[in-house]
Amino acid sequence: MMETRKPIPVSEAVMKVVDHAYALGTETVSLENSYNRILAEPVIAAHPVPPFDRSPYDGYAIISKFSAGACGEHRISFDIVDHIGAGEVSREILTGTKAVRIMTGAPLPENSDAIVMFEQAVEFDGSFTIRKPFEPLENVSLQGEDVSQGEKVIESGSLIQPGTVALLATFGYAQVEVSKQPTIGILSTGSELLDVAEKLVPGKIRNSNGPMIAAQLARMGIACKTYGLSADKLDESFEIVQQAAAETDCLITTGGVSVGDFDFLPAIYERLGAQVLFNKVAMRPGSVTTVAVADGKYLFGLSGNPSACFTGFELFVRPALLKMMGARKIYLPHTTAILSEDFTKANPFTRFIRAAYDGQNIKPAGFNKSNAVASIAKGNALIVLPGGTRGFTAGDTVDVLLLGVEEGQAEWKL
Ligand SMILES: Nc1nc2c(c(=O)[nH]1)N[C@H]1C(S)=C(S)[C@@H](COP(=O)(O)OP(=O)(O)OC[C@H]3O[C@@H](n4cnc5c(N)ncnc54)[C@H](O)[C@@H]3O)O[C@H]1N2
Ligand code: MOO
Ligand SMILES: [Mg+2]
Image 1 (cartoon, rainbow, N blue to C red):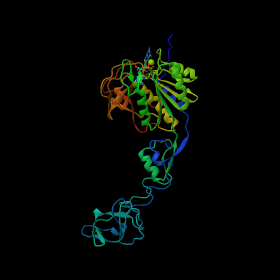
Image 2 (spheres, rainbow, N blue to C red):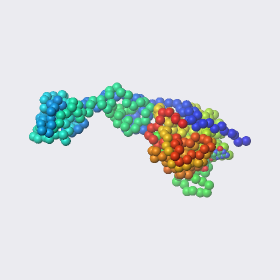
Image 3 (tube, rainbow, N blue to C red):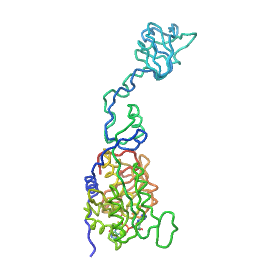
Image 4 (cartoon, rainbow, N blue to C red):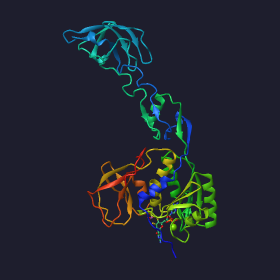
């Protein structure tokens, strides 16, 4: 008799998976190699930014109080006693109407407290005149206005984005402490599968899940090891799975997790003595997504159907790997949007519909069955519809999970 599987709610499945993540530890990388890694230490400002009061304009540094009373009819004249560019420090100590010709980024000369932009002055023969008074600190970029010393600028567990790289460089991090990355294996199972370069023959299809998952990992900055294709033969598949699991921190397989005569992953997990966390989730697509743990390592049994495979990765694999890497924001970002076309097909399970989101409205990205591949390519988000008998109509507000966003959110909101 066929086994009956008990579906568990999506949120429960997500929590079960994430609970099993163990921390991989940390390593030191050079700043150039830190992009897209997870920061394993907080960034504390070792000095203020900017580190000194500086000119934000090309102009003249003056003592503001000597500009008092300047107007069109009574222009005040200043003498230029020095000339500095960014990187230089003036040795002049200003008094009265002495001024320093100063370029953007240069530190304010001692005693000066305002900058006259070139556009606000008329220069002639070693001096210039102005037609308005300047306030103390007018046109000055103050020490620490951007970041004050000792401030925690970035939390540990943050994704290193280009801006983070700029901050790390600002504070002199030539080496950066980041979380280690997991070694991931991908194995595509199915006797129908051909390699991408092979010619189609009757009954066969090309393996699209393997390359897709490699790309989903690459989007997270994670490399992977490909174990190629494995025909639906229990003993052979078992050997490869066992070897791949031993060589990696986490093995992702696709296909063979349902109840078909040649779906061997359930038997393989049993032979491995793996603990199956769940093998049925109340979701569509991806209801047969199976996650098991053996020797503390994840075995992700993603469905063979491309849309189910894709969704299973984004919902379960992604947060688990991010948690292993010590990331704080491990979940896909959640938002709501207005459905711009009817979606009347009701289903008792929670549905994840590949969709096109424009920042306000959202609509399904085409043919949306579990076995669809084109809609994955056309979507940038998932519409999440709660299970139930009701269909949804244009104008309804729906939950949305955003795909391909650099950093997600810390809480699971669905
Ligand atoms: N009697 C039942 N049949 C099915 C059930 C069920 O509950 N009862 N579940 C259905 C659901 S839902 C899904 S999803 C699929 C899942 O199947 P498997 O995960 O076992 O995957 P396969 O059987 O190996 O393949 C399914 C489908 O996907 C294609 N495939 C597989 N691998 C790839 C790949 N690497 N690249 C592209 N396409 C791939 C494969 O050719 C099949 O068409 O089971 C339903 N059946
Ligand atoms: O596992 Mo399936 O994707 O619900 O069609
Ligand atoms: Mg199957």
